[in-house]
Length: 154
Image (cartoon, rainbow, N blue to C red; front, side, top):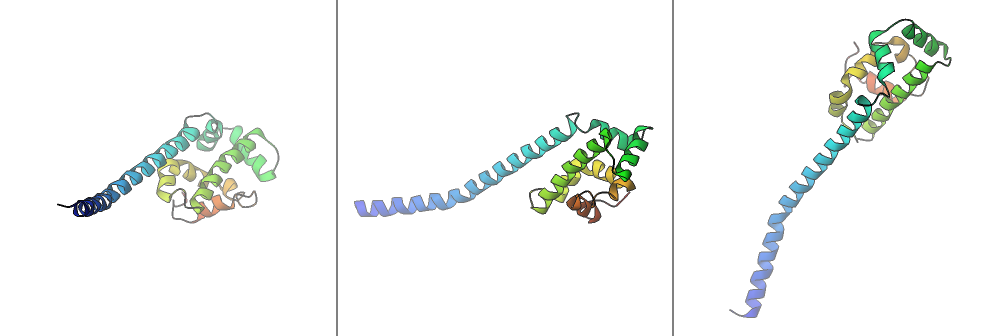
């Protein structure tokens, strides 16, 4: 066997290894991307549910305790300042952010539903919130909720 033949065999073998390793590299990359996405979604979940940031507004929207609920409705419909109204707008800003990510293709409907279905349904149960979304600049959230793709209005 001459050096030329050996070089050709090694070259062919190297090419074969490269071709065979490409699917493995692609699979490893796809797995890595899915893992990072899962970590990002877990972080999003943690920031929303495990901090107390939205605890009070979620309680008021969920249980409608008086006088807090009445004060919130009055403040939103009259467009007046109230601490709960500020909390509501921060809460809605989070979902506007999600709707923006959805529009950019960065988060899927399934991921949004999996993480935030209950809260999105909660928003749709309050007519005073639904009627203020567009006037207050929450167009993407309004479109997300109106699309019907995510959830039917309760």
